[in-house]
Length: 87
Image (cartoon, rainbow, N blue to C red):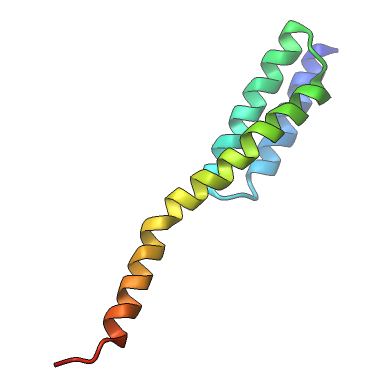
């Protein structure tokens, strides 16, 4: 029974990760590892997945923001340069 729970958790989390950006995929993989470890030691799967999501999803949003920051700064810099009158 535990093997089936582990397999289902991995399949669902990997499928969900396929629809998200790269940083979020790493978070889903980490959540899958946590869920598998929890099932292996006998903790309730649903509670662990909820806790992992509550902890890891905000981290994914922060990581995405940090990853997007250089590109956003570059876009702002280019807009500013275009807006300045050329001499």
